[in-house]
Amino acid sequence: MNRKAQSEMVGFGIIVIIIAVLILVFISISLSNNSSSESQSYKSEAFVQSYLQFTTTCEKNTRVQSNLELIKLCKNSGTCDDGTLACKVLNETSKDILESAWKVGEDFPVKGYEFSIFSQGNPLLEISKGNKTSESRGSSQVFSEELQIDFISYY
Image 1 (cartoon, one colour):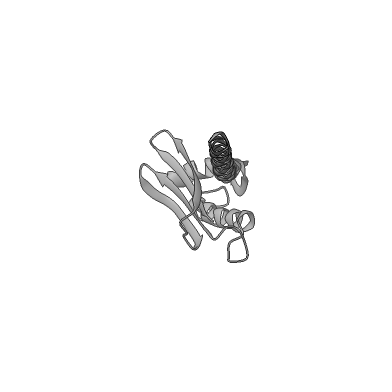
Image 2 (cartoon, rainbow, N blue to C red):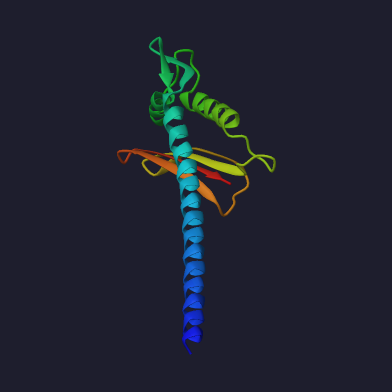
């Protein structure tokens, strides 16, 4: 009778150890997935911040405009010193930046993206490329209620 009780205790101990190992594996997998998505979201946020600081070919009062200044100029239907519409320069510059920064396609990790600039809720600029997938990371920058910049990348 004593041996039977001891073998049952050993069996119970083995089951507890197996369950503990499975729980640890599950926790480590879930933590590694979360850090990856935070990293991807950080990339989107860093991209938007860099995008805003990028200097453009538009000069206003002999001063080169950043994308943020160009967005404000476009919102007010302004022009550059050379007579080019600010919105046209903004559109071309944005497309060039997105094309060079985010390679999209089946051979790349990023399958598609959407980039939007809204002024008082109305779209000022919308650019999208590639396919939407169920996995996405994004960033949104809001400058008061007048200006909002959204970027979503699909993986």
